[in-house]
Image (tube, rainbow, N blue to C red; front, side):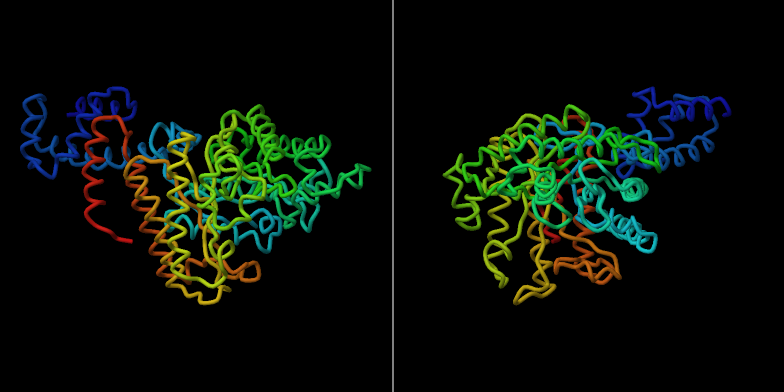
Length: 484
């Protein structure tokens, strides 16, 4: 018996004998159809060991292997298995397994972490998000020339604020939450491109528009220097360089870039082409996205009617053209019908959300061959006619559209709520904040969606036989009922 036990656990520990591993996985999957005694009898014919000892050992192994294998599928066994998110065609993958995203935005994490009196709110945010299964957070890796600035002037950093960003990254890892880090803002909040222009003017440059950020070589060099500083940063909590840290899901070139001075889109296109390649030259391991809102531009006039309004085609962005750039790995889209169509909420907003999402999922599959994340979506409590039931309906609509794509192995890679707050941060609320501990119905919807996506994420792969058999059973189950 001692020899049998030693051999068994040595095999489990090494994970080298594939046939042994597969046998027990197969055994676990079929245990609901066969009596344990029958399986033990089969095994007894193969081993000269005491029957009762083998029975007890097998029951233990079933439980241990099931837990280990589930964790293995999720790529979450130990820190050594905390690996980079990659993409394979139009899907995200981790350790070769599908990785569909249910995530959130909390943009101010670095600023809160810079003050010891508010640092705990960062931990609270990750705790509460993790409790409902949220696995990705999008946040700012910039604060340019403002209060608690990370970058006080070009290439001059506040080390305490950089350490605060280090804390955010290290704390996210504790809760198995990955981060999309945005590198600059299109808007004035937290500095943005207008701050870069101010710095340029202070240096004597002849600048006439904030959009000079996209074309002036000196301003582009400022941005590149910031990119280099962040990507090469060695985290003071983990001692891991950002560009080597799997906690970082990917880099976002800019939050909601627009270049209204050039509706043709050429100026912004050239900037994206240059910066995507530059980021990849420093960090070829992580994924890169642009940060677009998803508006269709002049290169696709047949898509103009999908835009929420005619103005959307004049802001210099071009969803399909922009995402065909070398170095861009996945697409981003935002969803704000209450900003783009009308402030007063209505059923038309829900219908727009469905068509807007489906159009971009189709384009990601048919033209881009990449996943698409709906990186911001929500509804403001300040909107006329707002109520929490409507918010739940909008969130459920987004989740259902994602799941419809997921069931088919489509390009709908996931979504990120705008935005999740812990209690006691109301003064930061722009109207869109969701405090999960105070919003039970919303929290339940988020949690259920996380569970559904985790089921898909647990498939061993779309191609392996065991996983495909499991996949089809679960797909049939999903298709037979609607829980949202």
